[in-house]
Amino acid sequence: MELLPSIDLRQGRVVRLVRGEDGERRTYEVDPLETLLRYAEAGVPRVHVVDLDAAFGEAPQRELIARLVRAGGAPHVELGGGLRDREAVEWAFGAGVERVVITSMLVRDLALFSELARAHRSRVVAALDLDQGVLRHSGWTISAARSIEEVCVDLRPLPLAAVLVTDIGRDGTMLGPNIELARSIARLAGAPAILSGGVRSLADLEQARAVPEIAEAIVGRALYDGAIDLGRAIAVCRGEEAA
Image 1 (cartoon, rainbow, N blue to C red):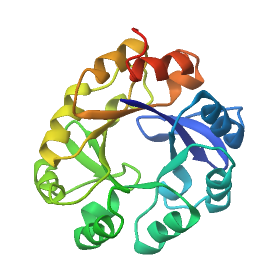
Image 2: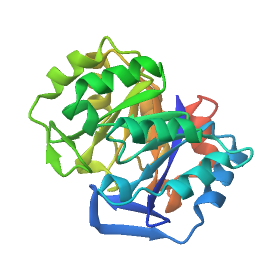
Image 3: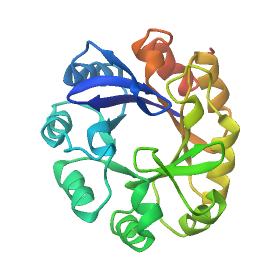
Image 4: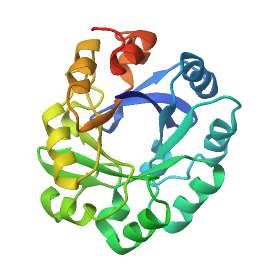
């Protein structure tokens, strides 16, 4: 399993939201590029970047994201937030983003999502963000009309990189991740899971690593708050150190 540090961007600054609520925003006085390079120096192969401005329907932070992608020696960038049409996805790939993370398009235009997933094999991640079992999209502001089981049936034939599974009720809370949810969704969708939401300790990462269906784990607040040491987290995820 790989550690996937998160860099959530709001108006050019690194933040963490609690349960996706912009009103419960915690801003960190760190530079996004310096943060990215620190992860690179530690040996992280990929970072999870979220454009929260775009996720909330505002102008995307493309200039900043392009700078992060172009940074010499930086990890690969997985980008999510506001990628709701073909133009946005193609811009991301053209800018050098390794993988894109998509929810709204999957719910609203399955044909286009499927086309892009097949055109960019193993570079599209389906983000399945659940609030008490209900799939939500558009910055987690709208509930999907279809069940998660129905959506996963549509995903099974597609050459996805992964499914990113977030338990919204735990995101940014430091309450611990919903590992069983990630496991079950991975099995339903037929793709490896990226665990997201609530990771708070090395023990959480060790528990996740023991689940074959989980390929990566996103960690945000626990790294910024110092609850988890970056180097030890990488080692635990790779099975090189016990929690």
